[in-house]
Image 1 (cartoon, rainbow, N blue to C red):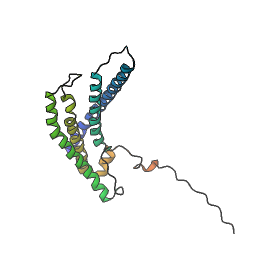
Image 2: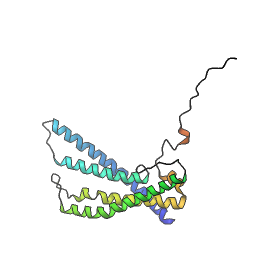
Image 3: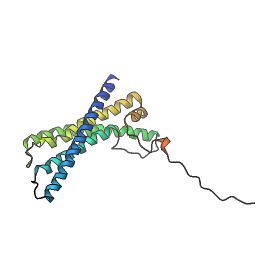
Image 4: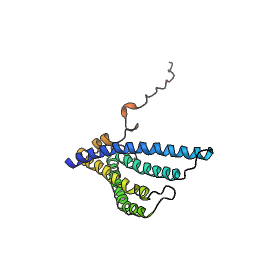
Length: 192
């Protein structure tokens, strides 16, 4: 499966870029919020109304890009209703990835029209075209589709367990060696 390998390489690069973008957005969000608080409480600082819009835009992008990364590593959309490793559990884990792919496709198709409508609107304080924020659904949808496809193609080529070992974020529940030691309760000895 050369396509699955190539997609995996592309997605690794995308994830690195997204991590950098998310760090930048988080730092921007914090700086803008701190400035808003300081300018409200310190009279000598000018109030910049565009900081509220920009912090909101940064927050929306963080949510949608973080959601896409969450899909790649199965940090979102996890249903564990059956014993781990049973056939119903394995089926629901594959259905989860198919459902994420469908949601991603919905975001792509409906998000495209939503993004285009942003070209006709301008943010009131920052004067940015609203396409800056309206395109979050489309971009997130494209990323969710790519990441879901990688999970599904890896499942088909390597098997579900190998794909999850490679892509899923480790969980304390799944790590058998990290279990806390069991305590032995001493019982009184019986005297004859």
